[in-house]
Amino acid sequence: MLRMIRLIITFGVVLACGIMLTVSGIGDKISRSKPRADISEITADEFKNGIFVSGTIYELWDAFAYMEESDETLGVKHNTRVTANYYAMPLEASFYGEDPEPKFVALAIRDPSVIKIADKMVDETNDYYIDGIKPETWTTLEISGKVTELSGDGLKFFKKYVEDQGFSAERTIVPFLINDGNDGGSSTSGLVMGIILTVVGLGGIAFALLRRALTGR
Image 1: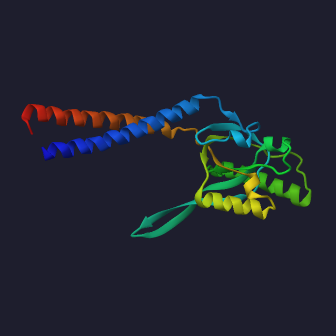
Image 2 (image 1 turned 30 degrees about the vertical axis):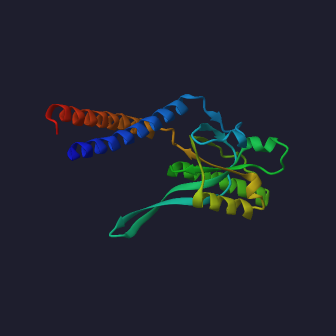
């Protein structure tokens, strides 16, 4: 009897994990099937967790934070590397409102080749606002990715950066992160894994109950 209970509990945990992964994967699939918000038109109030945005950006401010990853051996970190830059990006739509201050959202870029383009945009923006130097041709960037909430240290660094530029963090920050290049592709593998775990969990519970019915153990 105890053995059967342990089996049911074990497979119940597997089933619960499978259901969560399946629901999450289906949710991402549904989100990806909806029309993407145009980054040049979306307003601060339209940002929410899980939506997808895409389009061309024409202005990018400095990187305010970096994501680092490290290998670890016996509790000692080594081979630390930057895996993403977090940039302050003004929303184009905010320049057409009545509020004199722009609205900023965070943009995470992981592809090194795209980071080079982003850094060039930052240099052009700084040259224009600080020194009044206007390039012959402005650099632009095509972005596309999933929006997630920004919190913790990322949000803290974002607020500090905006305030250092002379803006009110309370009034100008849109606390969301656009993950460039993340089009929800990982949801497919998550969905498949969720379905597998769900089947295994259900099958295991059915096996345990059937065995109990046939053997009485």
